[in-house]
Length: 618
Ligand code: BES
Ligand code: ZN
Image (cartoon, rainbow, N blue to C red; front, side, top):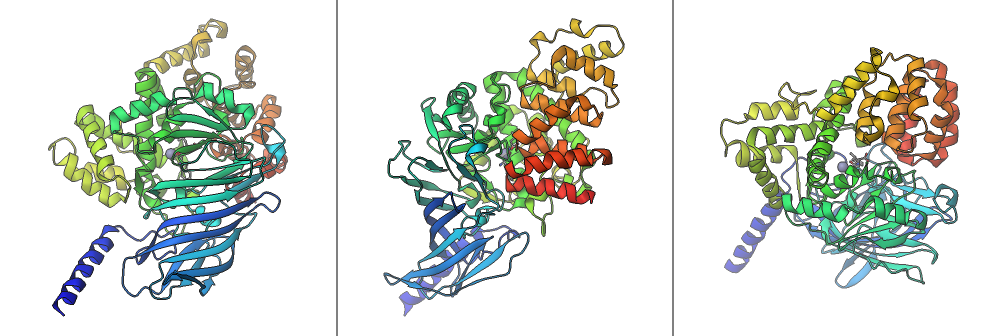
């Protein structure tokens, strides 16, 4: 009797501890009951069916109970067909009841599964549908090689649920294993340990032993080849892009080493890059061990590799220490933008890092003007909204500026120690803004009194726009570019006398971004004649130039503009162009024509964003 009491007491203590481990507010964006029972490991058995545009198979959840008497498991799904659910107890599998609820436009359909007592595992048999928001299915014509189809997932923020029934919240973590079957002329790949050998039978096995949030589970398949770059790094890409990618990203190993020196060991063994077709809607996605990368950054001169530094930086901020809810995205992206810039400084020098800060700062200031005030707050409120709709540069650059502010006040050495310790203390955990603020107060603010007040911290995190104490990054190199520009406008120098031969891509971007908004067409065309900007093969330069020309209604760029919008699906490069075009009623027909042609090639996410822009015009 006494021993039973003691046993009960121990159980209660253990349970209380586990429950208090999830010390943050409920994640609004999940229906799952992860505060009662959590899935700790998933096993996927999937067939990739390119003809039907479906993943077909099962997902098995290993369960851990956080409370007693839990009778159901609630999973997130969206647009998934559920065939059958089984539960495992007493050494046997048997069918179990389930209910799939009505579809909520943001959260999808809640899947409630009956849990007979002592159920240790649950297996859901399902297929994804062709319209899954987290998958894109490309026909051969949309790939570099034009011969094989291609598919890939993009699960962040809440799209994992569109291709697997899962507790889709960054508050919890799972390890995973997977067996994936596809036709033998294609190779599947996942964000996990794998054997880079091409298997003749089309069967591949993957293991991710470290626990990760579900938005980092990723899959792709296509004519994907492999090229090793260094000890820990390799490229996966269509053969047409393999060599160019390996040359562009050859400094990746040096980036890992720079980052380890600052923030401690890289904990994910290898760091490979998967180069996707151009319709990939993001610049990059930090899927662990295997970042997904847009081909639009292969510029031939390493000018856009800060993207790799960014995705790599997520191996600390994001993948190791994870935002607990999507309100806390700035903890992922702001820290990552800061770390990215520190890596760039280590590998390419201070001057380049400062130029990148200054460009980001200018972009943010412009963006802030157009955003609803509430969306300029780091700790944003997004209950009831799709996280995709609240996406902006705020969590990135305002977050980065906040950390730069702390670095300046506390000094680099102490701030670096703080950050390294923060990553270690929270490794493989999730954290929300309140937890972070508390940790910051204890480990930095109070440890070095008189440098920053909690009031200042509160303003950064909870008030709109940029605080008056914000760093304002500027670059001497850009100051020179500015003075050449001024001389040209005051007719003191000719364009041919500006020393542009040695300008970096960053100087060009500064130059274009800072041309006066009311620049005359004649001047625009003189610039183009001299510097061939419309034809620039650097996608960032082309973007900046096309944007300015849209705003100035210069028809001279129209052909290039249409080509650009049809060949690229990266949201950051195309959405601002659509927005600018749609600001002018007279351009509606022209824009619609481009979009009609481009839309079928875009990812569902990009389609959603741009459809909404058109709807606003109706
Ligand atoms: N994790 C993000 C992409 C993301 C964020 C997807 C939020 C869905 C929701 C990725 O690391 C990223 O930030 N990509 C940027 C890179 C850039 C800031 C260097 C992008 O895609 O442009
Ligand atoms: Zn990021």
